[in-house]
Image (cartoon, rainbow, N blue to C red; front, side, top):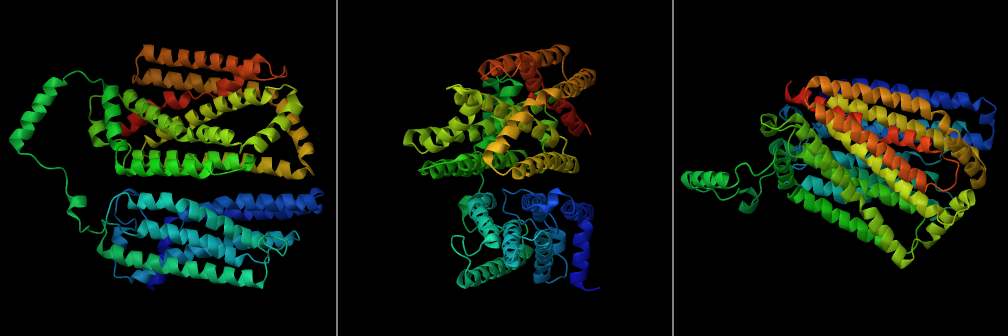
Length: 568
């Protein structure tokens, strides 16, 4: 058996389950699209465009998983300088170019297969993509870039993390350029003439080839620098000045006597996390956050899509900082120091949830800051006028936009708390497979809902018709609220009973959590009901909706998740 064949079989074996699910999923969406074409709705031009857009949207996860598919990288410390390539493979008597070419080749073939299937389905519906190969190569270039960053050993810590932050915007622009090239024609800007097509081929193939050669070089360097390249500067390698054992012992004993019994467990945990957040990686992320604020502040005119992009971009600093804090400094959620510390499990996990939530809110504070800058410069005037016109036509109140804006902020805050508390609860188990499957399930539900929403949007010929359908659908939501409230009540009762029976929290704490959940639900629901314009929404609608959105089970069950990890 040749070395390339052996490496290929090893890669397929490592991701066999995910690959089978992905291939089955791809076949299902394309077969379903073809079957839809034989229905009455699939004959119309609008229906064909809608189903083609749905196929493209449903194929995005197939491209997204390529970052982890056919990969020899291991889950390690992204803030360190060590290579992400599997060390035992680097010790094998296999040429370096083969170790790099096989993963890159399989990732490229998979990308071409997904894009080719999209092109065939679009051609079946009478909307052929004349240029899909070079955009597919452009998308594959991003996966080659990701392999280069992961495989490359670095001299200094946080270099890889810094590159990820700096390359995100150029990579996103490259992705948009590649996708736009597939749909370019003689009427687009710039037009798709022979010169532009030739330039696209040259640039795309050149970028792919250059990054592939750099990735092969990264593997060659990694074979001799598995734990990172050695720095020539003593300043980067030296630790803190070491004092004599006697002086250190006297200093620690004196300091211990001065601070004895003056710090609570929560205060100690907060100080412990603050020392990690004071590292260089946090400064890089904060600098990136400031650059994002500066970038969006330069806009002289904004629209709704600009605002959506603003919110999405400010999610990334929070994601990067939390991932670096939770798993970047060590391989496990619970460090051995905390695992044996005389600190209650509830204190550890709830403090982590509090810190994670605070980081997310701090990152998202950039949205109102940019909005204030837009308001002061007048850049948001067209966008606000559009919102006022659409919302005012439905409610007829001059302050309807401001009221709904506050309600949207409250709902967004609840969604953020739901995400952060679930993230800490799931990660605290240290069961990577459980976390991945839960993320995949949540993404599948959200993606299905978004695709259904997009499909409904494309069914209507104009904005007014879709707006009427949307408000009609919102009016039907109260019919499902009792069912959602029943499911939520079952979850609340079960979670409370499990925490009480586990003995991880005192009965007073369990009672306080349940009482706080009910009190916050009624208080927030009353505020939302008071703010909503019009009289079409009843108080019980708000109470039920807030009760469903309010995170409770993921907070109550978090100590059980950590206890499973701590005492396993």
